[in-house]
Structure formats: C-alpha cells, structure tokens
Length: 224
Image (cartoon, rainbow, N blue to C red; front, side):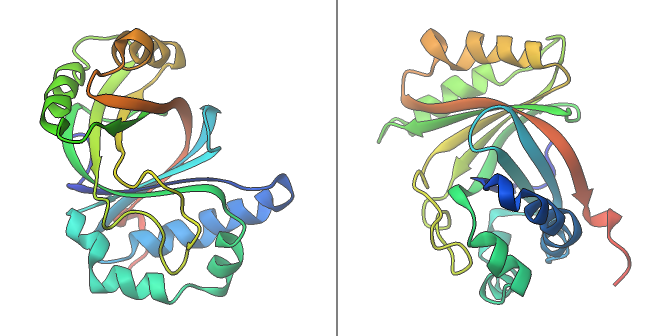
C-alpha cells in the first residue's frame, strides 16, 4: 500500500505572515520529529498550498488508527512544549482529523498532492465508498502516482487540549491524489471529483493542490 500504516492524522491551518518564520522553525526543528518519535507513528509529511486553503497541510501516518488514541500520544497532547503552546495558540482556520486509510492504490507517492474534502450524506456511506473506490485508480494516468481515501473518526477528530480551537467537519472524508505534475492532478480533480463529477452521495466541501516541503520517517530519527 502506498501510504504507510492504516491510520492518519491530518492537520491544516493558516498562520499570520508575521509569525510564519517562527511557525516554520518549530515544525522543522521540533514538532515533526517529536510526533514521529511517538510509538506507532511511522512518518510525517509537510505541505504548503499551491492552490488551496488553509495554507499549510500535514499528514502523519500511524500503524493503526488506535495509535491516535493511545496513552503515548495522549501523554504528548497533554504535555505540550512551551514552543508548542505558543505556536498552536496562533493557528487559524484549524482542521484536525483522525482517519482510517480505507483505500490506497498505486506505487509510491509524489511531490504534488491533490486533496478533496467530502461530507458524506447520512446513511449513504457505503454507496459513497463504493463510488470512490472505483474512481481511486491511478491506472496509467501520466503524472499520477497513487490515490487514497481517508475516512474520519468523528470521536477522535476535532479539538484537543493542545488545540481547543480546531474547527468542525470532524466526520468529513478526504481523497488524496499523489502526483508529479500539477496539471495532471488538476485534470483528475475535474474529471473524477469536482464540479459535475463530484460524488452523488456527499457534499463537496473543498479541493486544492499542495506542494511537498519535506517528509520524515521513523527510520530517519537518530537512535534514542
């Protein structure tokens, strides 16, 4: 499976330009390493919007979704560093989603990421899953590497003690399209997931394209 593990934490936010340098330093020198070091976390990926909102996007892959409700993770949430407290208090338009990776097809991942946020109609989840499974096939599409479906867990998503202002949409689903070319991703979004191609059993909340800044795997960490 192109995505590591079976669970994922997706976070996205804006930050005022005046605080962006400090925000970037915190993520690049503290936060991603701190999170990936937690037992059960496998890797983290950090993105910036090419065309989308919020501006920043982070994906944390975990061995299972249960890792994101585990004592080691909860302990870290309840004991944030001083830099974490300061930086997280500045987040705007925050999204925090804990999800199961229910479909992942292709080989590898790309430096460009398309994302579609969907709100399933109550009682239509199975039909939506079936429709999306048919669409999430990279086949031999040029510039498309892999495609994935994240199904959120509403109870685990949303605000935490660290981020009490995390926004709504805790039950939304997310389609991820890994690729190498923005034009290719734009074409797939239009052909399969947005506009007249939007799934019938869900409300289309948003879509966008993000550029990978860097990623961090558990194997990259120095020996403890």
